[in-house]
Length: 131
Image (tube, rainbow, N blue to C red; front, side, top):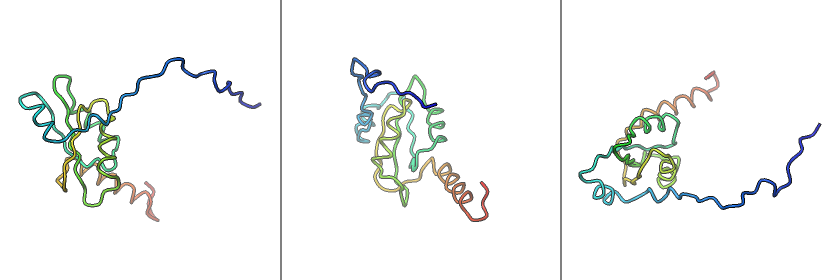
């Protein structure tokens, strides 16, 4: 018995949905510092390379309705993804208010998350690894 598919136009919405371009949340560091001077804000720095579920959980823990969450995207020594791509992924998270790009390499608050992920992948894909 085959699966019957609806006609192609049956589920087309009649009204266009508004799309929020979260890339507008990516602003220069100077603008962020000036905008939030004297205001409650939580600044979090990290590589987010790659962005993992544990990163999202930590950012959620840092978020609060009474302050802005600003995330600095720093550069690891050998990034998997371009910095701008990582910034766009983080900016798409609802709990993040703004994202700034930090030039150069910097110590990262998320280095332990990434290291655990890399070690897990290496163990999982080694000839003797079982996960």
